Length: 107
Image (cartoon, rainbow, N blue to C red; front, side, top):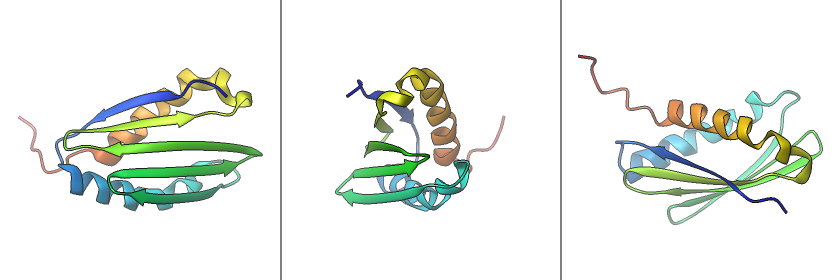
């Protein structure tokens, strides 16, 4: 098993709003993967356990939601571990977009 990819997503939403946005975003995961995916998710307190099966691969992750940060830990199967840095960058971009505080006004 490979080492987990760890991505920290800072936010200003508070724990409950961050959880709500993550829950809402779970339905879009399968649409963002070419060919679709089977997605299973389950909350245990403030931790979301997530399993994505796509293209013959099984990816497991956990998201720990805190007041000012969401920490994602993703375990890639050996066949995808080579793409770890690219996957981490993608997770960071999409996670930040999902948690963006749209109530802030520019300058």
